[in-house]
Image 1 (cartoon, rainbow, N blue to C red):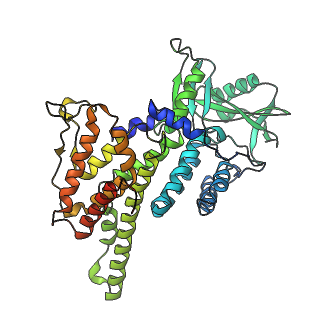
Image 2: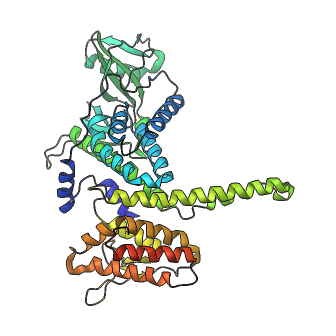
Image 3: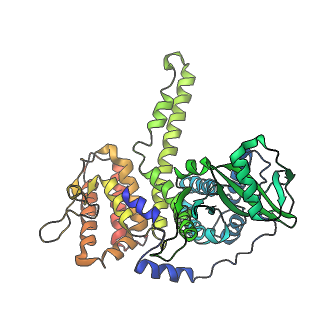
Length: 452
C-alpha cells in the first residue's frame, strides 16, 4: 500500500509524465465563468442539514453527466461554494458512488476528476493559514468554514485587526466572564484572517463598518490534524528562502488536493480484504429458525442482490482506477498499477528481505522473478475477473511504457503476469466463465488492445 501513500502525498510528476501533462493542459478547456450567485449554504443551517443539502445538490448535478453535457456539468460543480475540505470529500464520495455503480461511464467520470483536480485549487479556497503573531509561526487548516451567515453574531465593529487581537487576548485570558459586545454580522462582512491567541484562535472578518471576529478553541486544529486537515507549526526556512506562511500554505495545499482524497478512496476500496464479510454478518443476524418460508426466501434474495451489488462496485472501482491511470499525472508513476496486478495475482516482484520497497527480485542476469504469495484457486475468481478488467483498460499504455524501461525489465515482468494468466485459462479448477474472460483478454491483447 506504500505506493498509494507516496502517490497521494506527491502532487508533482516527473520526466515524461510532466510533458504529457502540459500537452494535455493545452487542449481546449471550458471557459470557467463563475456564477454571480454560487451555490451557498449559510452557517445558520445546522451542520447536518447543510451537509444533506450539499449531498442532494451534488447528486442532482452528477445525475446530468453524460459526454454531451460534460462541460455544463463541470461548470455547475465549480460554481458550488466549497470552503472546507469536508465538502470536497462529500463531492468526491458522490462522484465515487456514481462511478462504481456505472462502470460504463468510468472514462467520463475519470476525465471529470482530472479536470476537477486541475481546476478546484483555483476555484475553491479551503486551505487557510492560522497566524501565531507572537511566535511568528503558521499553521494550515482546511476544514474551517469561512462563510458568514446572515443571522450570526460577531464581536465588533473594531477599528483594526490589532484591536481584534487585543480583545481576543482578553477573552482568552478571562473567558466568558467579561462583557463582550456582540453585533449582528453585517451583510458585506468578508473573511480576512485566522489568528492564534493562546489556546484559542480568532476568525477575523472585514466590512465597511470595521473589523469583526469570532473565536474558537485551538484544539479544533489538533483534531483535524489527525486526518491531515490541519498541520503545523511552520516557521521561516532560510535554506529554502521561504516564509513560515509559504511553508504552511504549501504543506496544506499538498495534503488536501482533490487527487489525494480521491486516490485514498480508491485505495481503501481496493485493499478491502473481504467485500462480502459485512453482507454475511448482516444476513446471519437473528434466529433463522423462527422465520417463515417466505421470510427466508426474501432474506436469501436480499443477500444475493447485495452480493451482486458488492461485486459490481468492486469491479467498478478497478475499472475507474484504470481509467484514472490513463490520464496524465493522476498517478505519478506506474508503480501502483504493478502493485494492483501483483495483489490480484497473489505474487510479488518485491524483495522484502532487503527491507527496501525499491528492491526487486531478479536473477543473476537481471531478469525479473515472481514469488508466489499463495496458490490461486477457484475462490479467486473475483480477483481474476478484476485483473482482466484492469489489464483490458490499462494494458496498451502499461505495455508501451514498459518498453522504454532499461533492459526491458518491465516488459519481461508483464510477460510473467501473462504466463500466470494463461495457466489460469487452462486450469479446470477455475470457473469456465472466468477462463473464457482470460482468453478474450488474450485475444484483445493480440489485436493491440483494439476491440474486434
